[in-house]
Amino acid sequence: MKVMLLYLVLVGLPILGVSMIVKAGGRIVPPISVGGIWRLAAVQDSSCRGMPFPDTLVMTVAQSGPELIVHLNARARPLIGSVDGPVIQVSDGDLRVRGSLGPDTSMHEIKGTISGLPCKDGTTAGFTGRRTHSAAAARAH
Image (cartoon, rainbow, N blue to C red; front, top):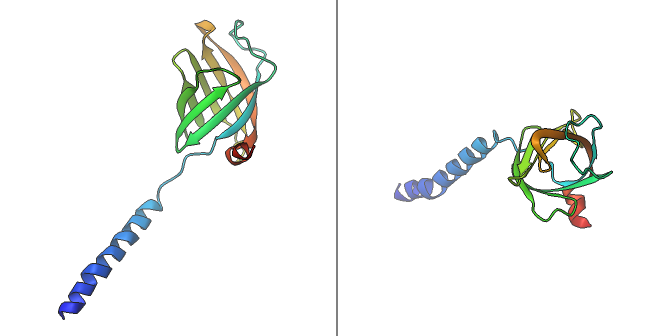
């Protein structure tokens, strides 16, 4: 009897605990994957006329969970932010990027705005873009 009770405590309780953790974890929804390399293009009707938007702006996104680190072209300082549902928001204090992912289930399209320097008057530069490499493909290069 004593052995049976000891067995239930030492084996049964850990199994019960693990099964409860697995059941609770089944309800966790992971954030959308936005990591990788994105090619952005300016929208012609942007209100910011001072934004030096090259023909193609390359946005490289590193993602860990909902947290993002974004590099724009050769800009030295990265932008830090997060993804919340289909919306990404990143900033470095001077420059802000906000975008919404496209309606396709693969999430390879983005549309949004860039604001801040040099748009000091509060105007924004619009952009559209496509992901050219996923995070896994970007790591392989």
